Image (cartoon, rainbow, N blue to C red):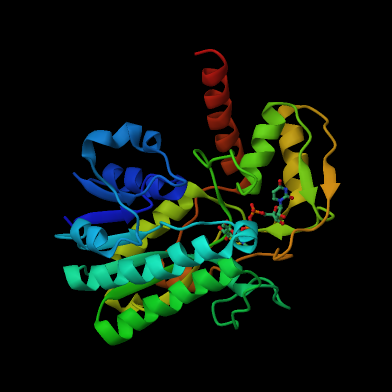
Amino acid sequence: MNNFLVTGGAGFIGSAIVRGLIAKGASRVAVVDNLLTGFEKNLDEVRGAVDFHNVDIRDYDAVRKAMSGIDIVFHEAAIPSVPRSINDPLPSHDVNVNGTFNVLRAAKEAGVRRVIYAASSSAYGDTLVLPKVETMLAAPKSPYAAQKLMGEYYMSVWASCFGLETVSLRYFNVFGPRQDPGSQYSGVLSLFITAILERRTPTIFGDGGTSRDFTYVEDVVGLNLRAAQAPASVSGKVFNAGNGGRITLNEAWSLLQKIEGVSIPAKYGPERAGDVRDSQADTTAVVRELGHDPQFSFEEGLRKTLEWYRGVTVKTANP
Ligand code: UD1
């Protein structure tokens, strides 16, 4: 059995990968997280099987130490959010670019075999054609998108120059349980779901025709596990980690109202700077080369997520 380390392992996606690894038989998983946007409670269910390192990925020595004896790294640690990177570009650059550089350098030094990287669909920017294929020229529209793209380039270069196997998975708007709705920078579905549960009006930025290939977190976990097992021939490559669908913000809000049996018209605000208009993954390459096999339709994922948030909200309201 391999030894695994997940950077950002206390975060929404990272902790789901940790649980996925343990469910598949890993006896221990190392986690590197500085708890900036992650929470230790995300690891409650698996605490006994996790070696937790409260480490910032910008701290090379600490990252290097945590990687001793590790075979496979899932690099999920990042400061996400397009608008956050526009309002305050320095921290996200530092973590997403310099931190990623540190992770790669430490992985190579520690003799890690493979690094699987949380890349972003934002790298595409606005393309003339949908769905978006990996062979299209990247056209980032925000510091966040440029930073995530730089990480992909570093992944490929570490594979070609330094013999470290790498796989970049371009996530397409991942959603699901444990996504933190607590900030203006939170993912839109976490904000919509908490709004509908509290019977509040959400704000839709733009006309609501903006579309996303919302991908349920368990499908992203499944793909990460496949990327860990894939043959070395995938090394250095970039794959879309999407579902292949396309849902507008208006459709997402309508579906939530239908499921909850309520009518709460959304409020509309100005379009956000740096926003991509449409996003949809072509999944041909990732299905062919990594065996990607998404299990959850948008509605199934949304219902599961809604139930999770409902439980958390009820628990908080009636401790
Ligand atoms: C982008 C990336 C995504 C990445 C994420 C990390 C694209 C296509 N996707 O997500 O892969 O994981 O960054 O942060 O670039 N919105 C509202 N109301 C709200 C909040 C948001 O209408 O209250 C809108 C936004 O303006 C945007 C859409 O919802 O048009 C999605 O926003 P968000 O969930 O923040 O994700 P992206 O920026 O699309």
